[in-house]
Length: 82
View 1 (tube, rainbow, N blue to C red):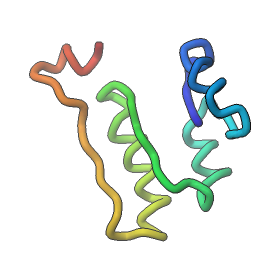
View 2 (view 1 turned 60 degrees about the horizontal axis):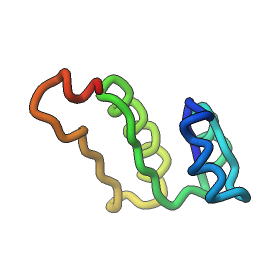
View 3 (view 1 turned 45 degrees about the vertical axis):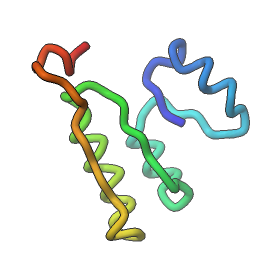
View 4 (view 1 turned 90 degrees about the vertical axis):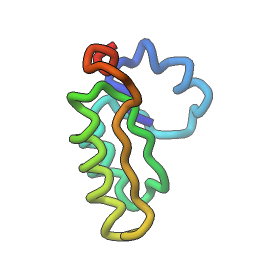
């Protein structure tokens, strides 16, 4: 599991005590690459593409036809920064 804000992530982290925790998704992808089966990127539009592109790099090597990516649903750019 990875979240830059440990305080906000604490409830989720407590649900899975045996799962490694990270604050930097790049470090997580480097260390856990072969052990990751799925990724959910939940971030603002500034980081969405970067995070998605990095996890797709890991998955494309193994599961070339099972990757997908989507931008946050919104009507205005302001809504994506909320």
